Amino acid sequence: MKTIVIGVAGGTGSGKSTFTNRLKSAFGDEIAVLYHDNYYKCRSNIPLEQRKNINYDHPDALETDLLVEHIQALKAGQTIQCPIYDYAQHNRSEKMIQVRPRRIIVVEGILTLHDINLRRLLDIKIFVDTDADVRILRRILRDSEERGRDLRGIISQYINTVKPMHYHFVEPTKAIADIIINSGMNDVAFDMVETKIRALLQE
Image (cartoon, rainbow, N blue to C red; front, top):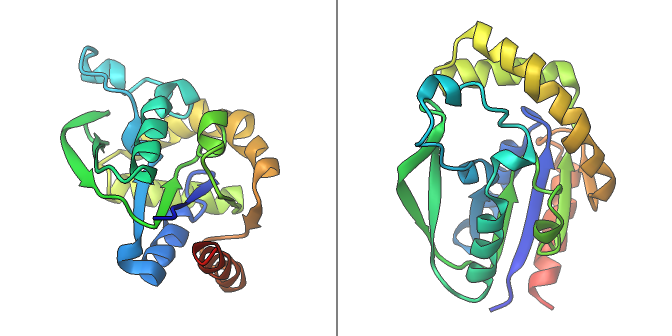
């Protein structure tokens, strides 16, 4: 089975999930999604209050080697047990989710294009680019409504780690992308990506 691996990167709140969800709607059961966030390292040996202060926007916070192994396994036709990250506990959950091989694998995350070993597995590299003011507002809504974070904590994390790490690690990967999309709702860009995927599947 031919497998197409697509990387969807971009800053926090840029619209990566919106674009990924559109791909899921377009390709249905042909697609599997791996979220880089689920591969944050297990921190069970560290108290919760200390876990809150970890720099989660640095590449070292992620177990990207495991993600690479999982993509390779899926490409080889093997089912994987994907970790699940618990944002409320700032730690990897004890639960896992089974992911079966699919013709299309989407890897989504702010640092998807940063690691060279991960990058080498990508057939299409996408960067979703959105204005910083829009991104921070989206992050505030998401973290407060979906992840149970308080406003003061969200702002502190954004200023101390999210913003500086974005400019140091995330923004530079825009130059590596095959396609740069301004927001996850760009219809023209989505149609181009969908057409390219279908063409690759037919090769």
